[in-house]
Length: 303
Length: 140
Image 1: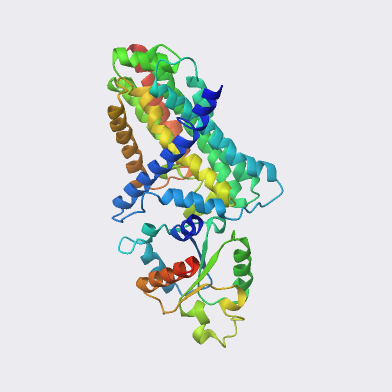
Image 2: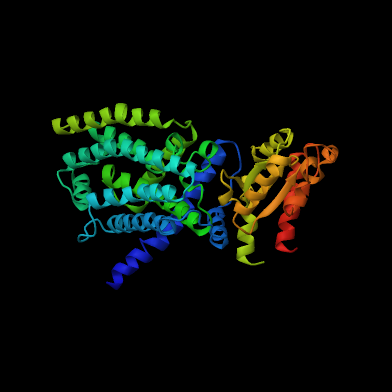
């Protein structure tokens, strides 16, 4: 029991992942700055931002106080749970049951729902526009991302994460096969939308609807939303590695794989313009879903 | 210097409130964010919503319509909040002083912490002003 609490709150859990998330999103900011030929902030910038947001006044607009306050914490709690599960799995892939594929998929959905709840309880018209866009975006990207996960299940013949990792350790990584590679690309695009990164940052759109879902959030609550985003950014490459590339979980190789995927995500973010919501919907339900179906068919045929 | 004060002064998030300016100051403010000057080095970011802001950056002469708006925006900003007036117009409404559409100067409406004069001020002048503001907040 004590060990579980330690795992959840300190080591692969909250404290460790929060620190890693802040550092990793500094790397994101730095790469963004270098791509734009700027210098970029120092490494402790995100820590200072968080400390500053903690001491600011928290303004609560509207009458739906409870939902407004509870929704950022909802996202943070679920993301931390995913982070501690994945962290524990990567440290020792042969552990007893701590969490499963379907649990992770469910928990990764909750930050988006938290954003929708927060945006719609703020009572701001732009906030409600933002949350309706986030809702459509979730409907759009969940279908292809589930298809990609199904491809992994077909290829590895097991529904538990330990089985998936074991299969890849014995028979080679999923990403080297054709269907696995297509599913990897599909998941990468879907998680770009889940992270709210640029081609799909339609629900926030600073220049257009002024922060959208986050428009009324200030102080600590805003800081928690930002922290949730950062932790999500930290666990996203880990999740992709577990699903598609976990043939060798040596620490050094893990870090190489991690930064390769991370760099890909940041470069996609920096080199593409924002889509409209209808374009994003068409994109996800059109080409990306078709790619997902092709991946499943190829996996069933054994490629 | 306490960590709290350092965190506040090293991560100033700026909301740009334009009180009917002629756009020259706004162009110079954008220059401060571009690669040559890049104030994100010091943690300064332009944000879209007042609720996220620590600094209210005002350009232009307040007229009858946006006097109320700027008051409202100031009351909506979470405190502690600093106000920076950029350009001659926002500092003391120079030649619009006796104009028919200008009821009051900016510092008669909301408390102003920093004046950056110039028409428009150079990006270097804006950065020098912000350095003075940070020193004032830190109490050096």
